Image (cartoon, rainbow, N blue to C red; front, side):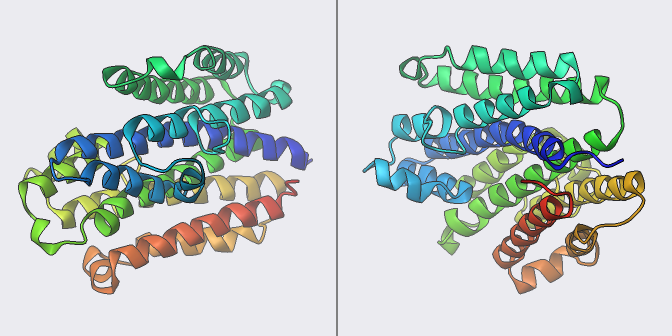
Length: 316
C-alpha cells in the first residue's frame, strides 16, 4: 500500500526545509566572510549581493531594501517572514510539515524541530550582529545536524525514510551547486584576481561553507586550486556535500521507493540523467564547456527531479 500523497509531501518538504535553513546559514556565512576579506570600496555589498543572487532572493531583497549592508542582508536571510527562504520561514515551514505527520516521524525528530523553532523564534534580530551573527549561523547548522541525527538514528527504513532522504539530498545538491557557482561566476569577473591571495582566501571560504576545508587537504595535499576544488565539490563521490554524492543518494532513495511500491515512476529517468551528468564526465570536459553552464544545467535537472517526484507520488 502506497503512502498518501499528502504525507509523502510533508515528509519530503520537512527534510528539504531543515536542509534549506542550514544552507541559508552556509550561504550567508560565506557571503559575510568574503565581505570581510576585501578592503576594496564597495566590495562588501558586492559579495553580499552575489550571495543573494546565488540563493535567488536578490529581487525580493531589492524590493524591500536600497543598500546591501550587513544588517539588512542578515535580517532578510535569517529573520524576514516575507522571505520564504529565510531561516525563520524554513524552520516555521519545517515545523508545520512535521506537525502534520506526527505519526509518521519519531518523537526525537519532532522534539528536535519543535525545540529549534521555539528557541529561534525567541531571538531578537537586533541582538544578532558581528560575532553574535556567526554564533547564530553555527547554531543553525548544529540544529540541522541534530535533526538529521535523530532521523538517521530513530526512524524506520521505509518509504517515509526514502521521501525524507530524497528531499534532503535534492536540497543539498542545489545548495552546493549555488555556492560553487557564486564563487566562480559572480565573484571573479576579473582575470587579474585568479590565483592571487584574495582568490585563495575566497576558495578557502567556499570549502568551509561546504564543511570540506580539512577533508580537502587529506585528499589533495596541496594548495587550493580552482580545478581541484571544483572536482572535490562536483565529482568526488565520497565527499558528502558533492554533487556526485547527492545525486547518488537521490537515485538510491528513488530506487528504494520503486522497490517499496513494486514499479518505477517517471521520475526515475530524470534521476538517472542527473547522475549521468556527474558520472560520465571529467573536470577537463566541464571546464572546456563552461563551469557556470554545467552548474546551471545541473540545478535545472535537479529541480526537474523534484518536480517529477512530486508528480509521480501525487504531492498536492
